[in-house]
Amino acid sequence: MRIRRTYNNGDYNKALRLSNPKLNKARDKKFFQDIICRSLYNLGKYADVISFVNEHNLETHRSYEHKSTLKLRIQDYQCPSPNLHADKKWNSTDLISNWHQEESRIWLRHPWGWTYWDMPDTYQIQNTSESLLYLALEVLLNPFVDEVSNHEVKKRPFGSNLALSFSGGIDSTAAAILLPKETILAYHKRSFESMLSHELAEILFDKMKAISGRDVMSIPSNHEKIRTYHQLPNGFSTEFASASHLILLADHLDLNGIAFGTPIDNTWLKKGKQYRDFSEAAYFVKWRKKFASAGLHYVLPINHISEAGALKICRASEYVDYVNSCLRGKNHLGCGKCWKCFHKNGPLGRPLDIESKEINKFLHQKPLRTAQHALWAVQKMNLNDRYPHLAKYLEEDLGWWENAYPPGIEIIPEEWRSGVKDNSEMYLKWMKEPFDLENVNLDI
Ligand SMILES: [Zn+2]
Image 1: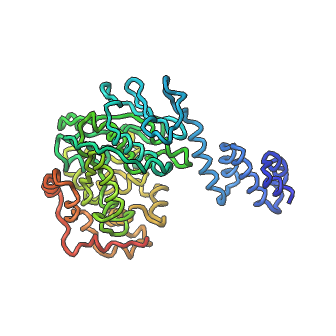
Image 2: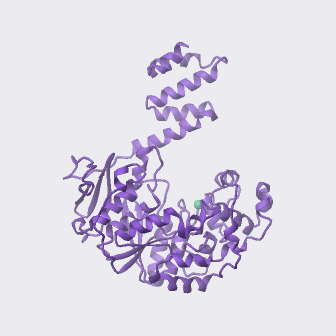
Image 3: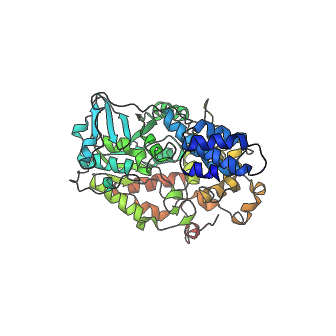
């Protein structure tokens, strides 16, 4: 009881001192382990939490191990800051004043620190419309800061060029193939060290240049660190943050639209497993309007195509040997062990370690990620027998999943609609009515 009281009073050092000698007593072992783990965490001794959880095999405290790993990652990262503007604080009333430029680096002061983008030499933030700067703030900070969502701003007129937020993976390569050849391809390059490798994407960019003369613009940035201030791993704050570089560049590149390689799995299907009428989805309507007020069409050139359809397009294209969605690949090859390798590289006939821990874990998890596509991949690779728990979803032939969904064409802005339609037909068949897609409602 005394130990519990000490812990509750916040004296974690003392709680540790009292608990440690008692740890080896069989009685109340769980209680002492719990106090030690929590005390270490509250004292910020994250490396000790991780070794304690592992040493004692504390399955009940894995969440502490996970949280500590994230904390360490944040602590490890030395966030760079600007030279001239280093003392500036976040301004929540004059939001635009949080943007700065030093040489070709654009700095954003946000409530927790600094984020930057390395822009082309001739880029000038002072020539960038306020509506773009507001939109960029919103896609980066919207989940964490309320004030960035409410702003009245002068509408920017539409420009003349289309750009694609291009990752070099299967989906965005399929999008690049369906859009006009002159579409600007722009890669967000994570500028800090992580598990993620740029190698496979950069091989593809070189080949695209060699094969079809298409350049890929690459913009380094560390904005994926913003969400780590909220105990989340590195990544995009919102789906649209993946195009924050293009939003900032929209005047510089005279853009009239930004395209995203978002497949059916995240458009007409909700979380890859339930059909919805995406053309009416609040999310789609809201963001289309927000982009339009910044003079940008929100373009979804593969909204009518599944990940399986995107694979089919890439397989038939001149980039087939170079496009790869694996983020851990090396030496021109995917790692063969990750989830992306399972559902993207596997169906392409590339080497796969089907015993991989990650693949088996994800296939047994509920909810099943990108469920409809994962089921198709299992069936496509004749792996049904390995996963009897999925049997009832694999009885029907899922071949329809490779075809394109005609109503999706209608939500592509008119300027690109017929081009995307014609190009889709070069690679894919159309789904037939009644559409199987509209019956997808997986509880899995
Ligand atoms: Zn992989």
